[in-house]
Length: 139
Image 1 (cartoon, rainbow, N blue to C red):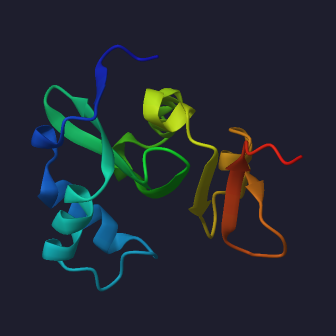
Image 2: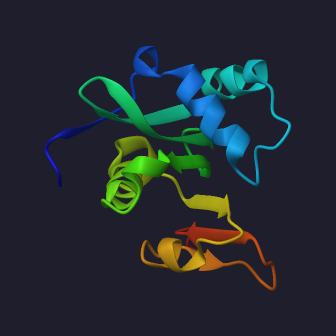
């Protein structure tokens, strides 16, 4: 892991302008207002990536903290892409104590299936978007 980058779940460190401007540019965040972005942060388990106190990455998990978690808004600033930060962020999320204990994780992606397959996410049925990790044991 690159030691110049810091990961944190402290919401006080989140740069709402950074998060919103990057989400606004994404295919999934078109039309989202800054107020909506702020509310999603308030209601989620958030992960930030920082370099010298500047935010360069973000992701959040909507969760019940027991059974289910939904990975959303995974972003790395364009000028920091290709440095392994997305891998570092998703690895950190999956190793977080809350996330590790969840039975089911889900996400939707239009273009990053191969990336998430490396973390054991699998496509759900014939959906072009949905992926999950399901650890629930069925008898």
